Image (cartoon, rainbow, N blue to C red; front, side, top):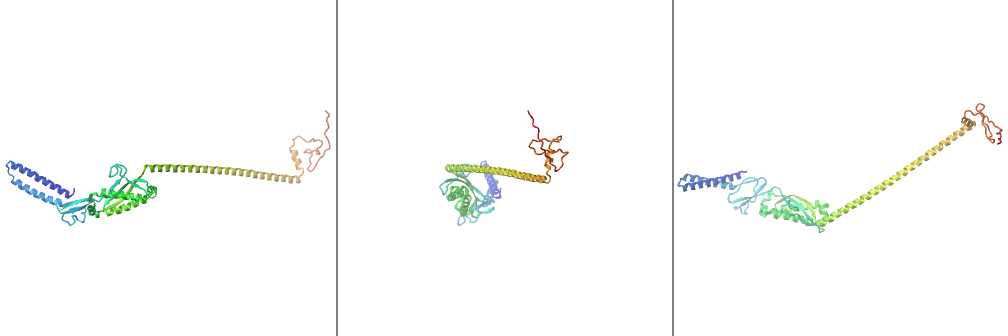
Length: 353
């Protein structure tokens, strides 16, 4: 409680005491009792109460978040040109009074939800885009009274500035801004640009009327049922097209993978075949070199072939019978002399059955 309110409360108590004593004096007088001393007290209390009333009427306390407009009967214009600043202030009793205005932030909300805005029911802003589509916009205007223009605001709007200035001005500016954009621009590509345009224009208009725009919030955009259905169908079609594109890409990747697999298998077969061919070539070269070595060895030692042949015979065989047309009879190992060739003209006896 500030001092001005305390003084007014105390003044009220003094007057209650005066009334009580006056009633008591009337009762005592009706009973033929003395009231001279009581009358003096009543007169003194009444004079004191009048002084307190005059003083309390001239003291005004302005809270920090408010400014006071002084309506004066002695000023030529009927008001003081400067607003009262926060603190305990003095005005001329009975000739001036004060109207206070809050300079703290205020929010005016226009919403499609029935319980969110200042107006019950659907209070969203209906607007049409440049391509003729209707949209419903939920918005909030955050503003405050300019402390330096409180007097001007009181003269022009008084306490009606919320309903008669902020509401119609913001709704009109929103409609004008929306009409400059297409439906898709409103909710996607140019939404931020549109909000900035609304904010700048609304700030300029409110400033002309003594208000400060602190922020404009575009809370939601609602489309007509017809356009919402078309947007949903478009999104479904885009999703299906995207899905088809994904399937095609998947098939392409699978085909590419199959091609790469086939190439890998063909390359593997090719490498394997090349390896087999190289192995055969190496083997043939080795066999040819072996044959060349054998041929060279035979040229140097012709009897080496007989020696190898004899080594393959059974250990107990020393004489070998050959057919009639066999030109040679190999000697036994004991009688074999290197370089010796034994020929035989003997023939096998013919047998008569």
